[in-house]
Length: 202
Length: 154
Image 1 (cartoon, each protein chain N blue to C red):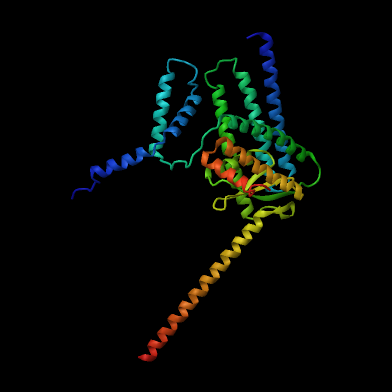
Image 2: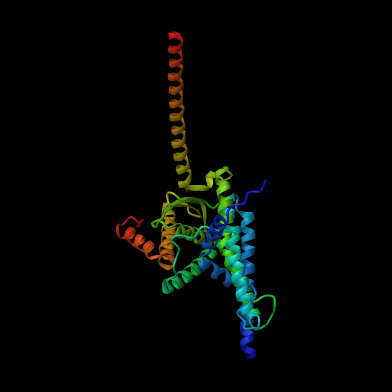
């Protein structure tokens, strides 16, 4: 008996579907990482080869491990984006000293778990807010309610209502900053709507 | 580059490296000093982020005037970027598992929004389960009656 192989057209279709999974921006990003790894930006005879090889490797990775595209994606707003990075770096710096002070204050340090509702519907913005909140000292994400768009944040040293409210405002400010720096137009519109309706204010 | 400029760069690099090392030391002390998982996570993941970044900046400053073939500023930037992106993932998983398996000290928490939410969810699930059970019992009951009726007919 002859072994059954799928007809050619179906195989071609599968290949095409796999090729369709290649996302050009992501491939370019991976090529950039490749170039940085191998010091490809210093002009040398092999720089062009590195570039081509990096692109081929990223395409091969996406063929072997196809991933769903990031929707609705993001866009970088230059002025707001740079401001966002500066603000986060500054926050990190200040909060590091706060945590250091808390480490060296005698006595038990009480904390709180607060819940912060997000005002935008984009998953990417939720993830970005969670990452930045965790990177800034003094707050750790304990739980993410994806369907309710809610972040549960453990705040070190928040033992009064006042401090809890301030921590909540900090997370909200971060979300606003991220959406304005990295969000799509739809995200920003959604945020502004929430701000205008007063729902966003604490 | 002039001598003075190189020296200034050297000093900045040294300061960055020292500050980074100090922050890591603080992280270590905090790890010993704090009593429970969630507070320890702050010190384990935190001054370390800035500490690591400072060490990387110091290294980059030292590396720029010297040409090496193995490391360059690009590699260091990648190290920093991937650290920042991956530390929260590990931290979140640790915190989540710790919280859900009850390995936290409730008396250290002043406010706990998550506990209320989880309790609410559990109650909702419990109610759902009971409803299902009742529905199943009712169905069984009806079935039993139908069988009984059949038997009496026979």
